[in-house]
Image (cartoon, rainbow, N blue to C red; front, side, top):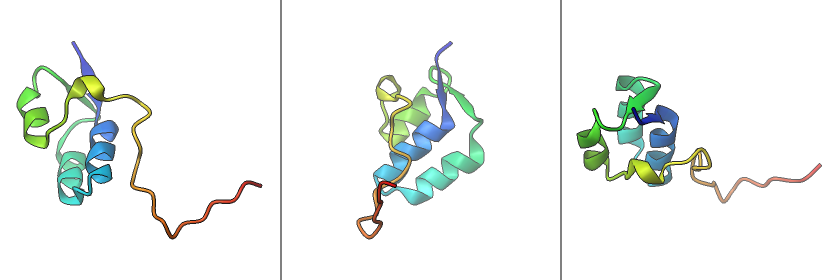
Length: 70
């Protein structure tokens, strides 16, 4: 059974600027989401579960944030 971490879906949605959808997924879905059982969810969100990896960004980069190497 293929599973996807909820955090990856939330990250993709946040990266697209879809905050309300990301909040909904975070509130309503379990931590691990069965890809086959929830195929319609992925279709509705426009996410191809095959493309999800742990390297997905967690949020958009804020251009006002400045990071410095220490």
